[in-house]
Amino acid sequence: MSDQGQAGPPHAAPPHAAPPHAAPSHAVEIRGVRKAFNGAVALDGVSIDVPDGSFFSLLGPSGCGKSTLLRVISGFESPDAGTVQIAGRDMTDAPPNRRPTAMVFQRWALFPHMNVRDNVAYGLRLRKAGKQRIRARVDELLALVGLEEHSAKRPSQLSGGQQQRVALARALAIEPRVLLLDEPLASLDLKLRLQMQLELKRIQREVGTTFVFVTHDQGEAMTMSDAIAVMKDGRVQQIGSPQEIYDEPRSAFVADFIGDTNLLELDEPVRDGRMTVGGRTFAAPARSAAGGDGGCEALSLRYERVRVGDELDCANVADAAVEEVVFFGGSIRYRVRLDGGGRELVAEVPRTGVETPYPIGAKVRVGWDPDAAIPLAS
Image (cartoon, rainbow, N blue to C red; front, top):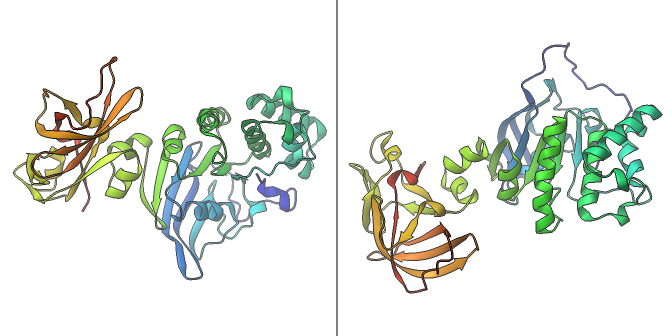
């Protein structure tokens, strides 16, 4: 973890300071940012607004540009083109220590020779804050992260989750306008990571600081975020709330990256409310004809929207054979192959009791309501 103001003058004022006015609605505004390394484009004209006081996630696979964008916001990287505004002020050319930000890295970098209290107080002491102010602020933050009883311990005496909370408290101690987090949960085991997701969101909600969180884990982003920017190949693919991105993906990439889905490629354009998939004809979703028949070439059908049974009451039904069964406890996932055409579908059905899953090779019926399928842009 690094408090960005530590490297420079204790009370340096941000450049291009604007006169006092109402707080901006966006904590961070990115406009047309481009960045390349040795000719390889990392960011390709990125524009993003981060609402003030929100938990905002940058989500995407490795190499999509999300960490580079975070470093551009922090000042550790300079954009080749475009602008960066933080709290309504132009910070495009400002060094890290003159930005109202702090950063938490995947490796928390706590000082091993300092106890918890001194680690949290470090940034405040660097800024020459008074002893009373330091004591009060550290007490406040230790209470916030639940480490009051561990204040005298060294980092080596703490669990991974406790060390992560110390790093978070140290970053918040300097009261940044925006806290930048670069995959800070990646090194935790699964159970602790799930616990810390809820803890991070609670802390963000209580302090009201804008969090910009980088992750490749869709579950993390969906659990914590008020808004998510999905990135691929240096570009933003879609921005929206977790529900918007899950329910209304704009592309096959977003649909497939967020959650689990069947991507149905159409054999031919939708005509008269009907579509052909894998040689079979089904009722098309009403939205697929919003711009006229033939307006989409593929659809997303979430696993949980596909039903499996002997008798089904839905518009689209087909006979199929079970090829794979995965038991998840609360649900059962089936991979089936439709009769006459060979198209595969995956369905995830909730368990309502102690029913036995269909065995591999069983003949079943699968179905879905037409509007459960989401049209994707061509």
